[in-house]
Length: 215
Image (cartoon, rainbow, N blue to C red; front, side, top):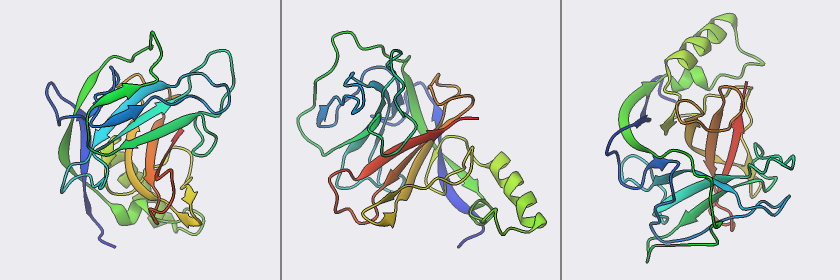
């Protein structure tokens, strides 16, 4: 494993990468079906979307992914969990753009365009097992966490509350991206981060999963 790994920081921008954004209304790259919460049945809230960008973010054969979560104030849905059905990653292939099933009056977050900016992180230090790490490795981990971009694609996840890598089809999922709650106003707890993962086998009907951790 390389000690230093190139990643792409996700940063607010006036124009940004096409189809990369937080909040607003989904900009469809194909047919987007608005999801509902598996627990309470309420339409989820649209959070952010990321496009396939060759050489930066490989989502092939999908053109883009759209992340939603339940924010029903009258229920306690496990919206932070990757498998509870209270959040969703809708992956679409390129095609005629459409959004179906959207609520009549969606409570949209303020839209922020995103750009991909080259960045670096110490992947080796970030990947250490904290249960067996030496004091020197833990110090390196602290430094690497402080220096790594909070919102990014590529690299490895920088966890808020300890490693929580989801599994799919009997195997660990591959990390895709993470997004910090600030400065976007996302409801990921106190100073939290959301994480997108992809099924390593590609053989299931739900190839992407989302989870978040908050302080």
